[in-house]
Length: 102
Image (cartoon, rainbow, N blue to C red; front, side, top):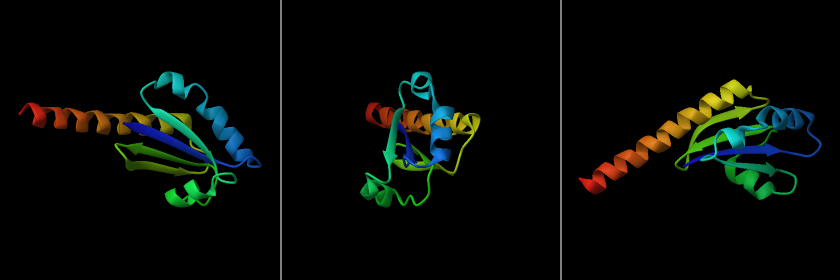
């Protein structure tokens, strides 16, 4: 499973810019889980992930951090990270399936 977490705060202008850059990604990658975490209202989650600055974007593949972007990340760069993580997730699923069938 691939997951993208965007850590923001309401007063952060760069966060608004990042949200705009991310528009449409959920439609383009329907199998990827996207979450936005406002660090002002959910400080516990930000601390759990070690996030101190906003915007921060984390990309996970099968529960493991595959990429981290602090600050504004270009859409092309983020899409490449999502695709790499998705390949890692798919590869793991295929390896598990072959072991189970084995």
